[in-house]
Length: 498
Image 1 (cartoon, rainbow, N blue to C red):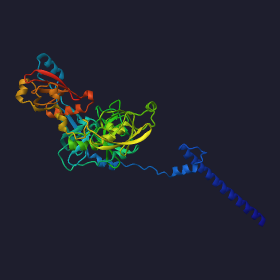
Image 2 (image 1 turned 90 degrees about the vertical axis):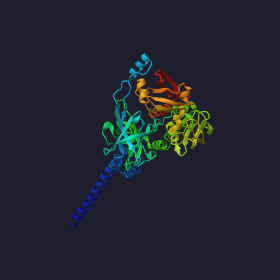
Image 3 (image 1 turned 180 degrees about the vertical axis):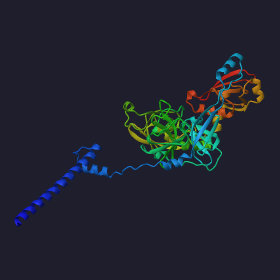
Image 4 (image 1 turned 135 degrees about the vertical axis):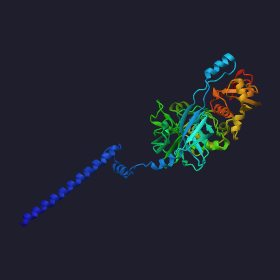
């Protein structure tokens, strides 16, 4: 019996050990299968020598949590406003031309129905300053602002900048909700953002997306000194969102929604916003000076492509290639030459021409910047004193830009309107050396239209001149239609670029 039990005990022990070993092997094999599966999903081979390290790193990555947008939405939605614009009744140009042709003077004009449009805006100060897009209020005769709590105000236009498509409005109110200004430079591709606005007149609409790209140039602005360095997102933005807020998950303003990439006019996947790094500078200049103080380096650039790199024997694909240096400009005085590749401005890297435009655009005339560049494969740094459009370093005021015409004006009296058979016009009151006198415009001339826009007030004329000054050189012309005090129609062309 002892031998039997001893033999049975040994057999059971061997069986137990065998079972335990088999179970351990099965578990090990299962673990190895899981390990190999996880590594395969990351693109690693089963025989990779870095298997344990790679798997360990993968397993230790933090799991992405659910992003909460409610706080950001709550912080921003009350500071985004509905901007409604009205365009004054316009005169039928066809009827006007017929009267001018047959009778030699403006005839009785037929007014067209008033037009209305809408967009969005962002309150940036408690005392009523609101930033929006220039194209939202362009040529509007009346601007209404409706807050999220349905309060409504008439807004005044403080200033515009067609080069960045930014405009600044003002309403008379205090204690308004504002969005904290964030730093768009800190945005990273892949980061969550919210778009807040009023698409299709649906007020207080919030959509979410991620930052798809930065410093994007999409060639939509029609201005000589345009700065396009948009934040690209996939947050849904539609007509009516223009001028609204792009905010990060902390509820901070990082951009002003401006455009969409679409062939239908509605959202098709991508939207674009002006970064706050540009918005802040533009708004600050408009509030302080009335116009944007645009700094100029004085170079014409080309984007570096593989073909250009090979053609010019460059050593990099990163940077802004200097195609031409403006004579006697800031760049030439600093020693920058054609063929140089600008790679850095102060502490900011320059990877494209768009980067260079943005970094220079943050400065004012007279600022000194450090420019790092490559020349013949060697790195060098120069210091450039930026200039204004006229080549100086001084501040340009709104009055300086308007006085280029060299005239003062007065609106027509009711008696003049009745005698001439017109219902508006702006008469030259005094004339001195300037663009109008050089073009042969007489001192008592009555201006009716400039660039096919009706001129009723000095503000109308100032706005037309300001926009023409911001256009490309070949488009900086004023085509003036008007009449003498005796009713004889005259036409003049005034070249602002000369």
